[in-house]
Image 1 (cartoon, rainbow, N blue to C red):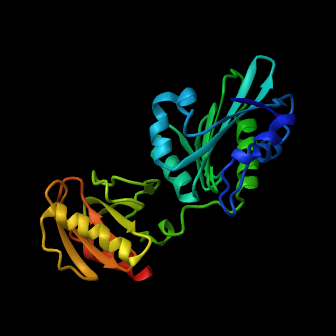
Image 2: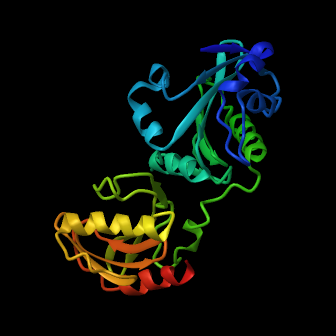
Image 3: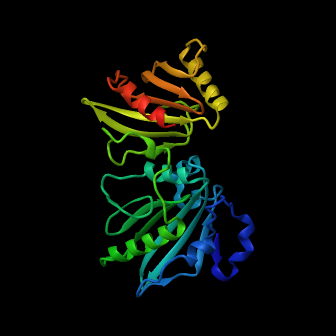
Amino acid sequence: MTIHFKNIAVVFYLFFFHIGYAQTPRELRSWLPDASGWTIQEDIEVFNPDNLFDRINGAAPLFIENNFREMTSLEYKKGDDYITIQAYRHASPQDAFGMYASERSSDLAYLPIGGEAQGDDKILYFFAGNIYVKMWTNSNDDITETIRMIGKSLADRIDSEAAYPPLIQLFPERGKIPHTESYVTSSYIGHDFLKSVYSIKYESSGQAFQLFVVDGATKEGTEEVLKKYYTFTKQPTDYKEGGLLIKDRYNGDIPVVWKGRYIIGVFNENGETIADAGSYVNELAAKL
């Protein structure tokens, strides 16, 4: 739907509010900075999980999987040129980060905007708070500085202290492969019961692997996850907190530590045994 700015108040009741991160379409528009020669358009388009397909079609399922709540589409114009801004609001900051991380591209440069950004001379993607922002232009002029100025200003208004999720920041630095941090809402390594998973890719002693944390929200929630995993692997369910070895027939042996609401483990895509697995798992577990 298209909403005219002066009438936007009539749809406030439709908006989902996340405590501490409540950005309505009206707020987002008011936070856009002036850009010389450009006019901020008054029309605002708003999409929800029911009609997001109308705008982004095949990409919509991944957004919805990452707890998408609402997308606000805004635009600057200068003659026939435009700068489009799509601000995707998610249920939580980690969901917005997870969506951004899933769309990282090796073709784009990393930029210090929001919690992290990628872009070139025509596009800019970043996350801040519980919002994932995508910007692009059709202009043939070099307006890189303008796009980045708008993006940084908007990111600072959304969340001036945007950063990776706190749990991601606890992961060990040694051997970490930059810009491989991720957050997966469900179906980590192919299992639908592995939800709310933080992970980073590493390389140590010539071996590549992922260090991950499953957040079960409570000790009981994590125990239920382990019950499903052990049922899948047909292992005895007499496990208790501490070090465990999950014999996953599709992903190889996965050493983990169960600590309260968390499962901390190491996974290798080829099912190899990782020599340093124990040191990485225990180092991270000690911080949780």
